[in-house]
Length: 273
Ligand code: DDQ
Ligand code: CA
Image 1 (tube, rainbow, N blue to C red):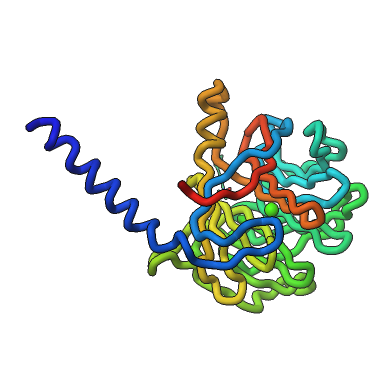
Image 2 (cartoon, helix red, strand yellow; image 1 turned 135 degrees about the horizontal axis):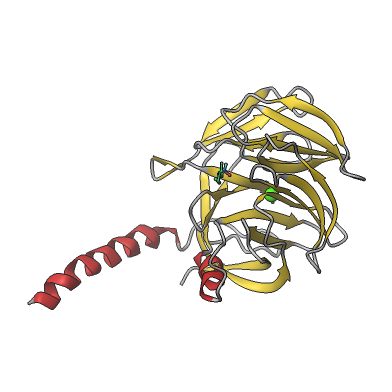
């Protein structure tokens, strides 16, 4: 009797989880080599690369030629860096002042745009040598994530709002509240623009949300708990959360990493089992 009493909540919970995910199995449409035909994805690791375990990753992007650009946080350790994908080696680094905590990063033309935590100040950098070009002010509640479609900037501030901004003036030209089944999806963090969607790491979760920049609607979820758990199991106890999505649109390669993770992963999506 005791066992049944103990198993009942588990059975109810599993049932609820099953019902929650079930309706999404056959929705959506596919796109390119990235199979987006399912609303809930798990992932498979295609390749692993070294990643600076001292990098508190806050922004990540792929710029061609096996080159990544990364923004890192923590006071006194914040930076923008150019990183070799294959070796993880930091090729160029520009440190931020000790009073700044690096956050989202995106590349528009020759300029990197970076925002900082707990301030409305951001910085632009020259892509060639990472020299600072100029600071700017933005109008989000805070600076968390940045991405671009090549024309406008998308931003997140840790709330459920996805912002669209004019990169010349940093004025907010549009914003949407991201909801899933009616609930606001808060803590939107690092962003990436992929196949006309904005993907967002949800802070403190092992999940990435696929968001429509048109209306903020939730297009799907990517579940990645195995990456962080795998690192913890292999003895990397000091790591923080999953954070950092980069997309190589030419070769359709998807990269993710996390704060203080010793590895960066190339992953592909698969249907949740
Ligand atoms: N954010 O990246 C989610 C926006 C902020 C993460 C802050 C993590 C706290 C680290 C310790 C702060 C020391 C002042
Ligand atoms: Ca990114």
